[in-house]
Image (cartoon, rainbow, N blue to C red; front, side, top):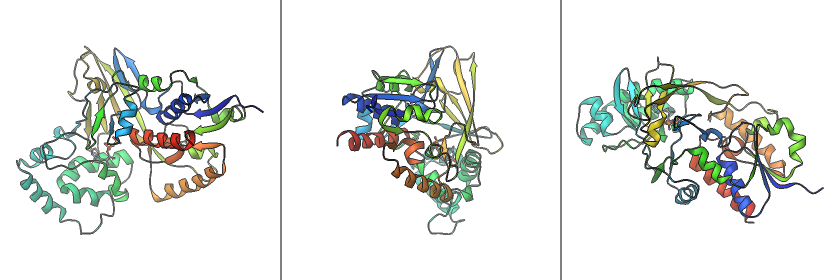
Length: 370
Ligand code: UDP
């Protein structure tokens, strides 16, 4: 039987969109489906009062991979946004990431030498050697004051676990700097696509058939036979009907409000680092694009336990889940006409957007240029 399409791409997020774009460019016939009623996955933005709202949480594009930066710049023009969030601890405001501005405010000091001396003293509370968990890692990086005020509460509500039960690598995402530099990222390239992420993904998918509101797993029989090959970017465990068990994620709940105010917080992201406040951060979306509208939209982000059927945000990369994931990878290898990819489908990783795009481009090279 002649298949109608060369490729069926399940999921219109960044992984699926990059693959679809590259396949289409090489003359392959492609159908993209997504069970949501919009494209762009969790990068999706909705425009209200001329403000692009990051519906699934703040997305700031940053990368050090030159070819990924060049790649995304074909589909959007990026602005000069530099992420410089602020932490609010019981009303005290501290700059992030942890840098001389943070240290100076915390201890009323001025020089890197003074900061270093304080942190050195404070880190003596933990025994030497490789940090065994997030708490030890954090204290060894920035000392006990910053750990108690800016890390402990935030991290424990974000992950729903004690810092002593979390892997050290999570906190290593954040730079620690002995300079007065509030740039949250160390990457060479950074910005927000002008006009929002949806427009960028739309541009990748130009000229490609996209069907929205279509759940592949519910219509497997119909869709499996449509194409010679399937690129599946949905949850890998769901594909196999959870036969080995359920991979865990951390969930998020968002509450968005429109305010008749021009500028509520003066910055896109304020982290609430004390444990008692149930949300982790408030996003004021207009500041991602230097908006000057007379109104503003703000979103409170509440971490929560995740259940099957809800949107999956952060993979819980502990030993139990990684073992389970390895079992699914084994199963996936046997399904010859399906390629699993993306944050949920192929990797189960705490992934930034640039890594997802890099991984999609890798697949394109292997699959389309062979
Ligand atoms: N973190 C923290 N305090 C903050 C911001 C971040 O302790 O004010 C820790 C927390 O453990 C979090 C990790 O750093 O899970 C990574 O933060 P990042 O901002 O990279 O998280 P994302 O933006 O991916 O949610």
